[in-house]
Image (cartoon, rainbow, N blue to C red; front, side, top):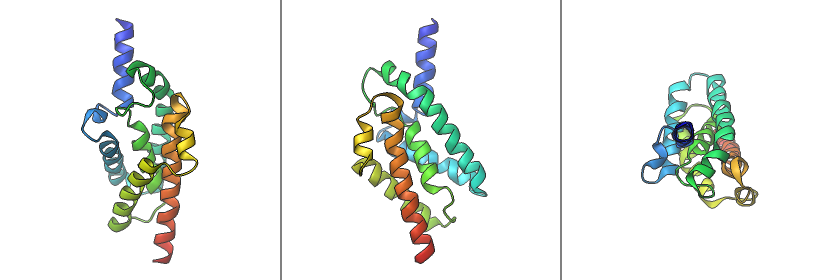
Length: 151
């Protein structure tokens, strides 16, 4: 019984409350993170705290969840996308156009896996699941910072 409960819990958290079971799970995971961002946008501190919490929890559950799902980096795991979009948008001036650009750019980079994300994704467990999204988020944040400052 305890094993089934822990497997359920791992799948619940790693799929971000089963959002990862929706069609196009990475996009819906990113949309969930965007919703959290919009809720917390008044200050970068709560956005950064939510991002840190998602990264920490994701780091703890993704390796065991990967084993519970029985496949490497299963699509149902989307807590990495939630953390990633939060990191992509933290410290970015709130402007709807920037947020929209950030969302699409993050999804594009998360899909294309620019260096070193593609190599990182080959790692097993939480490292491979979480860190490629961190790379995509950092690249996205840098692009958004440039756009916000110069355009």
